[in-house]
Image (cartoon, rainbow, N blue to C red):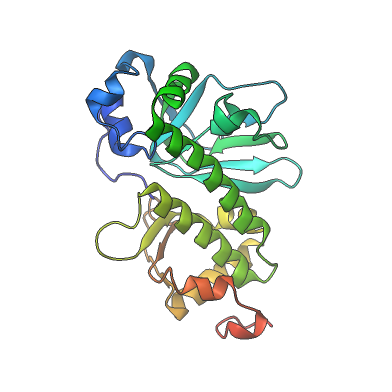
Length: 266
């Protein structure tokens, strides 16, 4: 997902929650209005390279769930390896594993820094509201629980990818595809294509590769027809990765060294 180009955000946070969030999208305004009011929500702009919070601190909880409505991505970096372990785009959210709601009470890990990689617009939903929805609304509870499954599957992709560069990058792209498809935010229209604001630096830190190697893998994937090249001088679109053959990436994700003909290094 990418930032809305030239489209201003509405000032009504409830409308934004319904239009721009996996958790709240299936809920109508009347249904959502029985659990919260607009003055309980905080709209906030998070700026790049500024820490938001440190997740998984012992006996430390957040006071709100962060709903990403525009911009981003927001990343989580694990402290021991300084590796990116979560990437959140619009329609997603973050902070659930640092709330004492549902599986959040047991879903802890090493202390990990959460930061906006690029400027991000979020809505903060108070933990009391999240708890009430979780207790009283079965649909919300099912979607909220699904967030934890998606986080585990995202990390599974990253932790089980090999050091072989094409497979490592394909693993990250497949993880993002699965996440966006589960949220229902992509693909849009009839084309089975996915578009991500995904800088090379972010790919490198998620896959534990150097930047030059990532550049060569992306060029190879363009030549092989998995990705579409974006030739632009606009810095807002310079980091776009457009996946035009998501099913083909499965072959790269599961490939061994002798099966990726477009990668020159054996």
